[in-house]
Image (tube, rainbow, N blue to C red; front, side, top):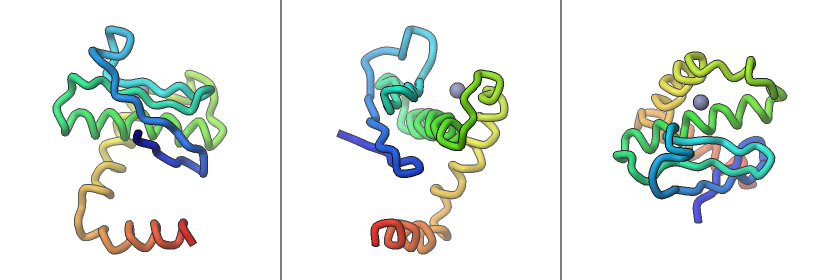
Length: 104
Ligand SMILES: [Zn+2]
């Protein structure tokens, strides 16, 4: 079972058979604290989709609750940049520091 903690909220990550609702690669269910990602995606697309849905959750937890607040182009642009934070090994030390600090 995989979980992602966003603002202290435990989001359950579910990898689903086929595409989520036959159209999208992923979705975020805010009321159930779940992120669903299609199992059919290649690893790169899977990570991108997970981060995309996590950005939706970040905005939701920040108080942005309307569809208007979740413009897909905006989310995709933020996702692309956020992904570089975790993909860049030069940030490993900071990521580890964050993990340590948040767990203390
Ligand atoms: Zn989206």
